[in-house]
Structure formats: C-alpha cells, structure tokens
Image (cartoon, rainbow, N blue to C red; front, top):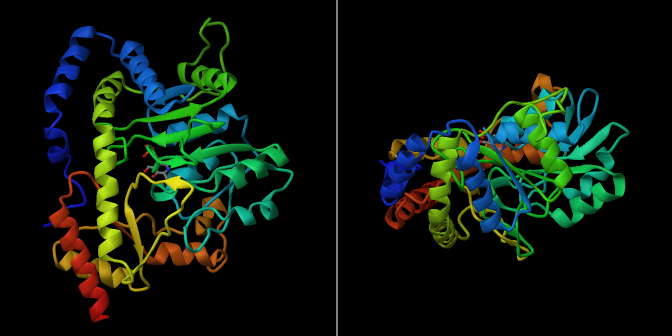
Length: 364
Ligand SMILES: Cc1ncc(COP(=O)(O)O)c(C=O)c1O
C-alpha cells in the first residue's frame, strides 16, 4: 500500500528533540500563550525575515483574524477563487462579507489577475488569492490592483510556507499573509495551528487585540474578537519542527522533480514559473479521466487525494451561481488529482505512483 503520508516515519528522526520540548513544556508550566508561543513567533521571524508574526489556532482563524483586522464585515465583498479549500470562502462569509469568485488561469489554476478589475464594486474591500499547491500567485499584478483601488490584499498562504516570489519568502512583505499549520501542511503542527504574518505594526496590534481580547495595556477591548490563540504545546513542538523544515522542503522539491520527469508529456501539470520558487504542498496533475484514474490507483492500493473538487461558487451560502459560470475553475476541480510529495514518501514509492499513472494513461 502507498499512503500519501506517514507522520511516524517523518518525525522518528526528530523524536528526541520533540520529546525534550514536550518535557520542558510540562515542567515550564506556561500552558496558555507565554514564552513557548513567543519563541515560536520569534523563530518564524528569524527564519523567514517576517516583520510581525502572530501565531493562532488554525488557518481558518488566521483568515478570520485578518479579515476583521482589515475592518471587513457585513455587506462587504472580498474577491477570491472557487478552487480552494472551503475555509477560504467560509472565513469571508463568517465575518458577514460575501466571497466574489474570480475565474482562474487555465495553466496555473491560480487567480487570473486580468479578471479582477471587472469584479470590483463599491462594496469590494479586499482581494484574497490562494497560493494553491505552494505556487505563488501574480503578486505584482494583484498588489498593483489593490493599491490602485484601495483594497486590502489578504493572502491565503496555507499551501505555501517556504515558497518565494521574486526571491522574497511568501508572506513577509504582505498586508496580511495567513497560514495553516495543519499537520499535513508544508510546516505542520501536531494538531491545529495557524499564523498571520504582516509587515504592518498596526495590523499586528489589531490582530493581537482580537486574539487576546484586549490590548497590551488591558484598557482597549475590541468589539469583535476571535479568541483563538495557538496552544503553546503546539508552539513548542513547531519550534523544533522549524529546524527540520529545510530538509522537508528539499525532499518535497525532490519528489516534485521526480514526478515532473517521469510524467513529462503524459499528463498536464502546472507550468514552472521563473519568478517563483515553489515549496510544493502536493504535486497536482490533470486529466479528464480523473475519477477513473482515482479508482485505478485505489485498486492498486495507491491512495491519492484531490485538492479540491467542490465548486465553491455553486454552494448556496456563497451565492449559488449556476453550473458553467466559472468554466475554467469547474474544469480544474473536475480534472485535478494530487500526488503526494510528503517527506515520508520514498523515491521508490513516487516512482511506483508515476508508473501507475503512466500505465493508466497509456491504457486509456
Ligand atoms: C487553502 C486553505 N485555506 C485555508 C485552510 C484552513 O486551514 P485550517 O485547516 O488550519 O483551519 C486550509 C487548510 O486545509 C487550506 O488548505
């Protein structure tokens, strides 16, 4: 059987360091916030070059915190995409705003920056692109559009910790960069975790106010808050995992390179962008026989995943648009299949997965 990931195998190598951090955590006695969280935030800043880092409970909370800190609420609109995880659009709706779905670029599957202008109305307050699969969106173009129209750029970086755009790590030069640190993610915790990076001291303060239910002086209490601080045990363990992160990133990139070579000319895959360095979350491939391929692989005991097959724009809570209203997004959602690049996968396993895909394609 080939599983998409095996945490026990990945973390066996750093088990002594993780166990030591766990012991220290127990003996230290700071079980809410405190120095474990501060140490994690400092290390994130040190390793990425971010100016402000705010740890929180999950990627969903990170998005909600950013939206509220940007002053977004009832009646506002936020432009995003419909080929992402439910949480992206849900976060927008949860603060009372409406997600407005932008069509994606066919080759990259990322927000088509050329179509954003036509979606801007007097209610638009932000653009929320997703660096899907770890591939950076066109931040130059989106940044210019946001600056021109006075909109916030809130990046969903859940797949892209460790990726760069024009040699700048994703998130460090942002208004709001929101990360999920869910266990499967590029930097994964041992439970739910997330964070917001921002270059703005003002945004840092307003996110923290909402997170801690008051400001540092304990005299300003936010009317809306999200009490979703990162569990300090997760922070302590993540601080250890950060040391192993460069090795995990290297391994993800190696596995992606292997698939790229083995599957060249066999299936459609994402183009390589010379402006970006991708730390791949998964390696997506595309075929109009996706569901047959999924069954074929499952019959061979190869377990792969799909990110994502729900047309978010068609859900009633997000406006319930008609089928066919975003044809490129819908095709993406029907054809995409994710090959695992989790560091626990061996080259032999990735080769077996590639050979199985090739044998399916050759036979169909
Ligand atoms: C693109 C995207 N956005 C948001 C989230 C939400 O993150 P979390 O599960 O940590 O709340 C995820 C997590 O899977 C994600 O993949």
